[in-house]
Length: 173
Image 1 (tube, rainbow, N blue to C red):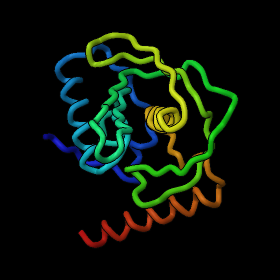
Image 2 (cartoon, one colour; image 1 turned 90 degrees about the vertical axis):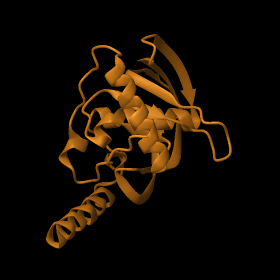
Image 3 (cartoon, rainbow, N blue to C red; image 1 turned 45 degrees about the vertical axis):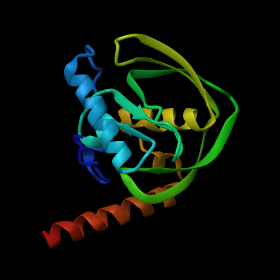
Image 4 (tube, rainbow, N blue to C red; image 1 turned 135 degrees about the vertical axis):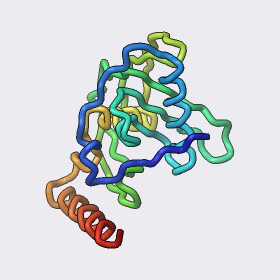
């Protein structure tokens, strides 16, 4: 198991745009395994490459609940083709913004296209929790965080909290 460090706000890499992956090779497969190990250990339901400092367009997810058989999804170069007009509001959190949760409104359904670990192109429809997770993780690939969907006041409050924590950590070290 190769667990990686998860970057935390205000790390600038969380705001960078990830690069496409040219081909699915052993290195990409190892990265996917490391990402799944890191996500399960955190614990979380999704993780994007930039969250561990890998500026590549790859996300991993597993929405299996505790006690259920793991059902990992690995998406390479994912792209949302279609969003529903219907929206859903749900509480979101993020491994890169620990212990902070807010309600976010997003489209209730999406159609996503991606390459799997076998190099196959996959088109998948998703709704509810999976659709939300896909949108959240794909946002990370473009430097967008879920707090960007909040009011300016709430977003600024979160940013200030993490900037203050970073300053305190630097003073302590």
